[in-house]
Length: 446
Image (tube, rainbow, N blue to C red; front, side, top):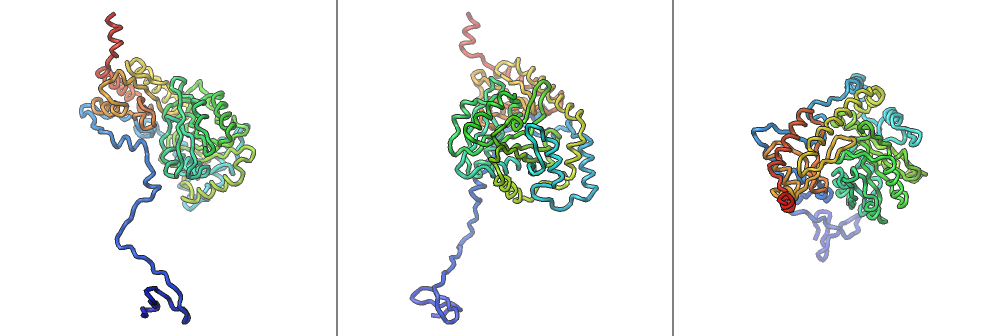
């Protein structure tokens, strides 16, 4: 039987080509629509959103809401960026030189400006060692993507920035959490960290200064971290977005400046130190050691950067001026404010029964421990913070969002009077719900 240019012989389709017959494949046709999200989409989960979206947040209508949960220093308008930063951007726009595509890794001139800014004798940099990215988040994504394959594992701090897990799991990479020690100002439990390393460990993430802890590792501790990485030949992804946001009296060297043999991808950006997180300008600094990364990792980063054709060109055009012309007084003023607010918060909450705040040394966060035995009205830190919103209209992020229960995180960027008010409400809330342990009561009776 002949059907168009097809012949059906013994029930099989054949096609005629120049008089010869050949078996033909018949394309199967979908009978119904069946469009599903990809495995990558289904595996992408933000732990913060998962917890916050499940909370019943109904503020007290008699008290204005104070959100101490958002890691955006611009929210309250009290921490504007410097005029020099704004003028740099205006100049880039007015020049009309930056309206087109840039190389995917960034303009050479802009990369040179970043390398000049961060280069030091112990960790020299050139433009070729810089990849510009769409914010520090993309820098982290590129670094994980270039170092890891599906089935590999990475070591991530606990508590730590939730994006690491969000990115890794979506790429089929296993996350192993190493502990930070609140009693040691959130230093790494090095023995625990080292015990997690195996032959599939492709990356160690070190966050310094820390989100969510506000901790700053000193030189000696960083050197101990490097020894572990060196012993097991594991490269480091250094999340240094809060570098130089360190309180007076503390010193925070870049981990690359201390490394003689461990290769490091350092991720940073404008977001926090320059108070412009929405401008989405980040970078990767490639600190190779003994050609461990060689050309392959560099080329891998170039290829990955081509997926979105690079960072915002206008901000790139302003970058050299921003880095060179922002006055030191601007940085100092920001740090002074963050330190003052941290001291207010720590001082106020240190005297609240059942709370154990840990004084930070940098960044813009403070972690508060909860002695849940004294708060039997609540199941956990999520329940505690949810009820804090309901009764006092103060929203702190439960540290379960960082996989670290029975703590909550406070962002210290709010105006000072708001911080004082929030701490007063937290005190009132805790005094209402605090219960002494039964043994405490017995002690009092004796």
